[in-house]
Amino acid sequence: MHKGFIRSLVAAAALLVALHGAPAQAVCSCLNNASVRDLDTSTGGGDGQFAESVIVSAPAGQTWRVVAATQVFDAENVPTAGVQSVRVPVATDGSVLLTAIATTTYKLNFVTLDAATWSLSVSNGLGTTLTIGGRCRYPSPDFSPALAASYAAEGPAIVLGATDATGAGLASSTFQINGISQTALVPAAYVGRTSNSVLLTATGSVVPTLGGTRYPGCVQPVRKSFAVAAARPIPTIDPFGLALMSALLAGLVFFLWAHGPRARRGRRGS
Image 1 (cartoon, rainbow, N blue to C red):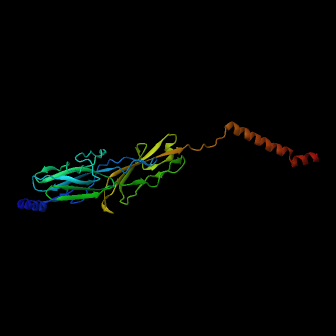
Image 2: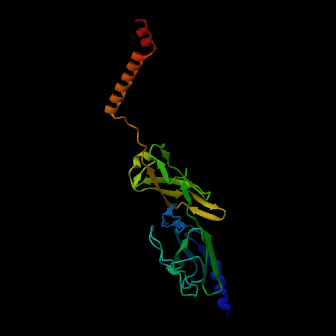
Image 3: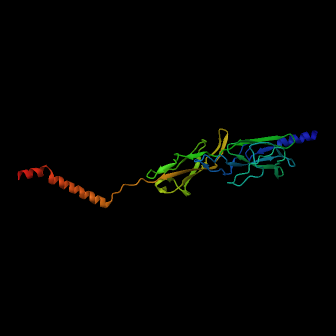
């Protein structure tokens, strides 16, 4: 018992818990798998995910297990970038083990969610339990100026821009209209199309911490559809009708001249 107690003290003194090398702090590795936020249907977005890892440095031969987890998913089943995970919560019954990737290094890969406060506790069964956690966010972009549902064909061009509601800001934003890169929406160019849409692809700024949240610079797409009303017809005059109107006007002038007051005075004087 005395030897076991000494071993526990040595193990506790040697322990170092790190998340991708940063002690007790989430790195928030963007999977950039958020669905498109559709402004027309108010669906999509807010479902981006992050790849995380817990790495424990401890004496060889130990067994580290997950004993508590909140908003932590898909142990050792992290998807590739752009793909949504299956979101299976990490079990806390001791069945999830950290993998010994080196003699004195133990690691577990998992997934966390956009804007979710998560935590993970692991134990070596020798009296040492370590807890880490964090909160990571994708940007929350929108068009600036806001786009309308419809435009007049003769309306002015709208320079496309974007803003971020989280306060962290955007590092970059690109736009496509009907799949073609654009920097402005020119209504006249889309007359006659049954449907049009603008896709904003926004990349957030990297902000290590803002209000207790880490912004690692993830990508969030946003889409807005619009229609363009047909151009107002320009009134036209039939050339034949114009000639006829000119002839009638000339005849009227001649009639007034021939039968006006001067003509009557001339006839009386004769």
